[in-house]
Length: 190
Image (tube, rainbow, N blue to C red):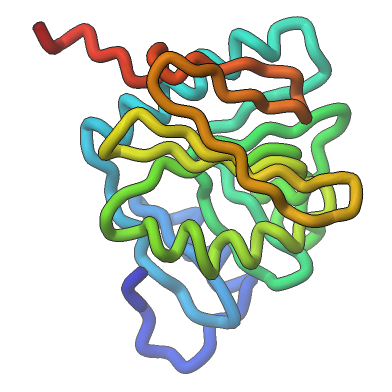
């Protein structure tokens, strides 16, 4: 993340107002606004493949998947950000300060990139873990066919599950099965 504001503090309301007029996306945390990097073709293709496969698995269930155009707000820490995909089940809860931000995702998906992987695994996940509704955090590698799912167990602890070539990742919170090979299949290569 790169800081875009020279102000020592930007209120959340000012951030929301500026974001509504902005052509690019920004994160907000602790009064600081950060640029969000644009995605690569691989990033975009992986995000859409995940959305297609998970979206198909959710058919007929009381869950809805959202793209990276939808902001997620972590009420406990204040973080406002745009995950690559999010899933909400049963009912949608919006942030009382921002009716464009959801606050109750069950699943969050991030496509890892060289510039964001450390943040996605570290500080961002630290914030995401504070979302009471969150059950699974999905990380998708851009460098190799690998899907990681951090799953909150019944004791509230996070456990890592990994899948690779020929395997099926499981999202138990939404009863979805994801073929790793299906996510990484590229019809543009020979």
